[in-house]
Length: 362
Image (cartoon, rainbow, N blue to C red; front, side, top):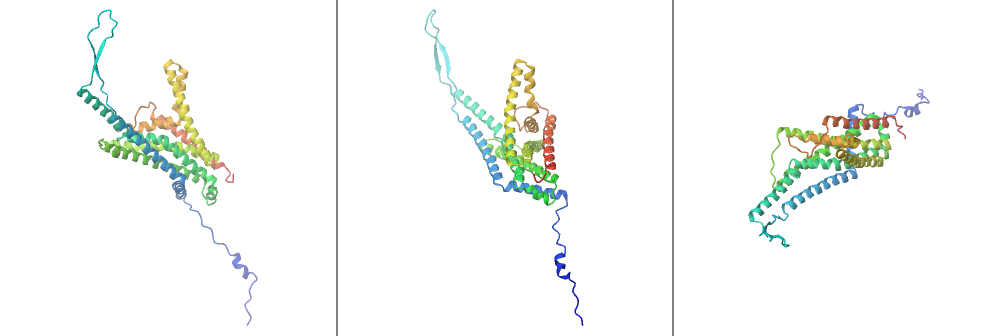
């Protein structure tokens, strides 16, 4: 018998065998984008900065509510001064240098009771306008339009800029994530954060308006059916306010590839818009007073600012039937919506263009 012959290639067959294929990324565009969105939200929830910002947002709102409660009790418990009843006595002699004699009597009990009733009414009006439902929702909305925007810009700049700082974008692109998916996931996460923050602050406003104001003697009545629609529209307008400003941080963090650029430039823009807008509005008021056409035109420049148009949208959203927002606003809500939408389109479009054309190794 002859032994079976072995070919020289036999010992190398295992080495030449094909390697097991790597795990293929999810080919479903939407499912993969949602997974990326969840990852961005996970980072927002787990990062220490996110927890600190949430704590500051809630803590400062508690301070605002506490200050309003303090004002209410300061008005209600202030010392009542009903005044004195003073009347001249007698008639001075002709050509006399003596002054007219005035005699003052202390106020009557009826006058004291009237002054106390007016004081209680003033305190109750303040409570019902700023602490009770629905005024407390308006206060929560105003607070969110400033401090909520401030904190969301910080968080958005940290999330988007952190992608470049930790080079996580390169890893995602290597695993098959497209640049459009990356930008869409960041924007979707920002929208979810804006919706959650706006909803949380409105709920806190409702709790204050029912619970705190109820403990102070205010009565609560359920809103009409149209009022629930107003609450929904106000929530969407407030969330759009947060989202639009968050886009500034998104764009600057993308442009500067850093957290500092996203946070710093966004906050500087917020401050400049407030300061410059106040100055230009003041010049417009001067123009109205002196009838100067140039100054009047300058005074209308802030009508095209992002914050002015977002504020107009929020104000109109909370007007009927609950009258959540106070004050007045003359800007057309449809015009304000399209102006704000144009700002958002510019920030999103430029941000995507930068990500789309930038070398991933830069």
